[in-house]
Length: 364
Image (cartoon, rainbow, N blue to C red; front, side, top):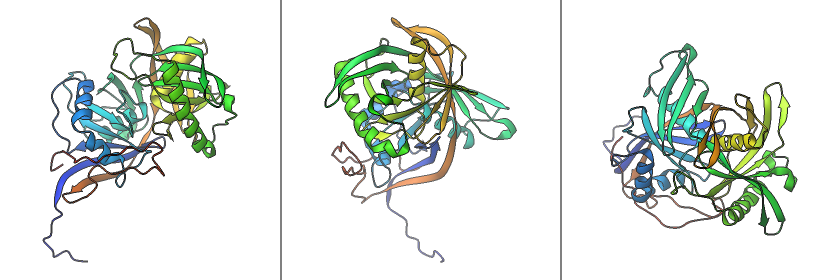
């Protein structure tokens, strides 16, 4: 069909983004079209974005353009001379200070899009997340982008073997660990779960209840940054086993408002490494294979030990892969009645309300 029309879509905003998945978890990386932000750290930019441009998060993550299972990353300039770029991470209900899967996707996208040059068999650079500088090591042998390894900010255990009261269940034993987000870590056997994909709905519902109970009964505050939230995630875990790959375990992380992380979760893996180290279950340099509900894999290890405030901590490194699924121009037509999308409780368990107008650059 020939296009002889001169009609142009009346567009108020255009964003350029790469759709991708990190070991199964659905993510977006927005590389153009974003509003200019004040200079500052990535954490300061995240706070400004959350206050003044949250409508853009809703634009990408709510229907009709997004879904509850997705997250989105906004690539922004960095003032840190050690970093090649900064990024803001946004999920369905919060702006995490760090996300391992999203970090892997950002690094992979920047390399595959040619925004960061490949420098040899291993390409190394740093990204600035709201949590701080994150070291990146990417397998770029033969000029192809493969697995990405990130060196996280310190992870630590807030408490071990803590008993909380879960309504309708009774006493529940949890560990609480920080790896860029704060997790209530629960042995799945306490509920008879085998951590199968078919258990996802029950895990999500129960995980939300555990999260609420743990956050109320175990209030925690990050010793360096008191602005960070307390417990916002539940991680169900299987027992640790030994294999020819080293230590292995499976997990299911419940992300608000009630969905399962499709990948093994990078900050969750970091928190798990810290908790395991505090329990004497893993040593520095020992390989840890973490599996998701769909059997995708992150590998992790402890590079060193340190302290964060009064807490003993570890420096974790986590590896995984991301695949690009699309390069998109997301547009907002001027008369679109849902500029910030909408949420319906059939798929958004804790539906929030309100519509906002997107404020962004008019071109990518």
